[in-house]
Length: 207
Image (tube, rainbow, N blue to C red; front, side):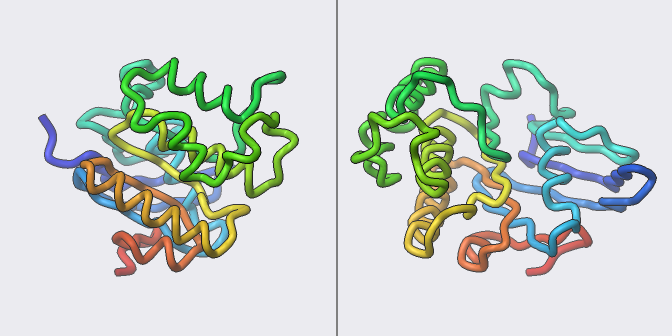
């Protein structure tokens, strides 16, 4: 067993010979929300990629669920990642994308109709994602992420394309997820989102 969902020890990542992360330590407990904050280029997205096992580390150690992150079904069955906009399936509507997500992952956290309502997509449910606005596509991506069962959610600037009102709604949804025992790590520039959890900068703890 493990006491922490995430354990990062002396993590250093160099890209092109330039240090992006240096000697970073981070521990994240079950049910915790952590907001990774800082300027562009400070290593926020790189840290998330390390946690997802998508970025090789130069030195140090990253453990998720007590072991190094692995690109396998067991890992991704427990981890939901929202980074860049996903590749949408041609010919499928917004509703059908959510139905597919629910079919792939057993025991969805909510019904498709509930997800469409929560993310204000009911009137656009039958439209293909590429016919949606930027904000609507981001809400669809978030709906897909929160609909599927998971233990850990990794979010890279989830506020992109969202208006102020829905950013507040998203904060409530993430707090609800954490209240159910889920863990959230998100890179964000939005102060409202950042304040719902412990704030951490790539160089150390902010608050």
